[in-house]
Image (cartoon, rainbow, N blue to C red):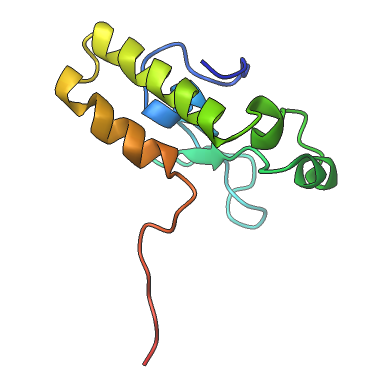
Length: 118
């Protein structure tokens, strides 16, 4: 299921987290001037993987990019399917939801909504 990431929690979470998704934390540090360094409760952070190796190098992210983790979309979808089937086998996802979850997660980069000003 994807490559290991040291910040991933050891418990079941969202499907993409298990397959190829970003790193999530259950906390969010506060910005300078707003309690810098203190934790902001009930607000987690998301650290997405760089899409490409070029992006990873520019941002200095030590984790492999999505491009490096998976050769192509088919391999990425296979990792998502394996994660969904594993979650279903462990009863964290209904078996009837596996196909829908795979279809949704395989299209993870698509915009979820569209907003236009008149």
